[in-house]
Length: 179
Length: 299
Image (cartoon, rainbow over all chains, first blue to last red; front, side, top):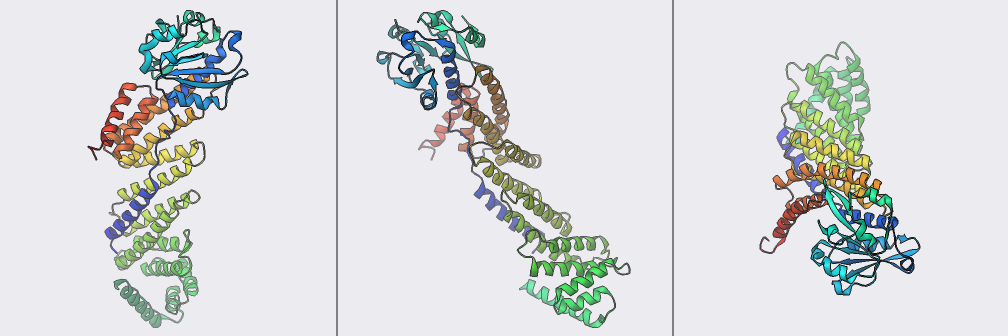
């Protein structure tokens, strides 16, 4: 067998081996951004105090609109509690469907409905969390923003306190901006 | 058929030489006598003596027959031993022969033996591509290379090197992905093998794609393992690490895209990396392209 024949034969075998053994894919089963947001949201529950009447029963996080955060938060409810309250996640199809919840997350595709969200939550003690630039000036308590590719949050203390919630100074310190 | 004739003529030649020269002159003659019997252990004993005998150990035939005897020993006794010492000794003897055979008397026969030994080394390298024996695979591949170059110093092995490294990296990567968490030291090892491939061929799509995925997976793994309870300072610190990994993944995945490698997976990879970088606009571009690729019109 000549050198060239030998090399060709070997090339053939190795190509075969390579194709058998390649084929791994991104570990993409999780939504990386949703997981980070879920960690933020769980932390918000530690830095914000709800009135006594909200410290019993289940701790409810509501979501309006389509967001991968829903499945991530649902996963979180299986292992976490807020103080002694077990967690539940509710998906609301429209602002009319909103019922009592501790945190309401308004997904980006429903950002235009902030005004009707505010109306629905009047007289409630709900932390409104959004992910659209400018919403912290339109009634949201916390708004997620992107700075240098990283997720950060803006805090509007006045908006939060309007709903009879107390904000820890530690959360102010961790916010990208405080209004 | 040709190989058979070659072996037969070689044995006849050996027999002739042995009959003519034996009894008991030098180690080579004695070794050839026993080789034709065939008593390989005795042949080995005398050829080893010859190799140490200063009166004949500078002769090409000494090393040629030593290579031949050790090759036969390998074939008869260590064919299934991926770490065969006889085979290495055969290669070492033929290497010595190459250096001293000024008249090129044994070049053709030696080259055939070297090719045969190289092919067995290669096969054993391929068979050793498993997590427990990959170091032996690397050793056998290195020896295969060395043997091929002894046979023909001008032989082109770059594409072989690339294919072997890709197969090795792919196997090690599969192993590293087993279990719940990525083993970072194994991932670094795999990455460095892929980078060796890129040093040989910067346009290798597979290596570019794989390095991109490895960096991406490292970041995704960190995020996946975050505890919801993690404090925000730690979260910010880990975000920095993950963004750095996503940014490292990006040029490799872009290169894979430019090369048109593994189109669908590369588009998914790019979309995921930009998603990790919170760059919605760019994520949307690649997602759209992926949708177009997946649409029935494209198929």
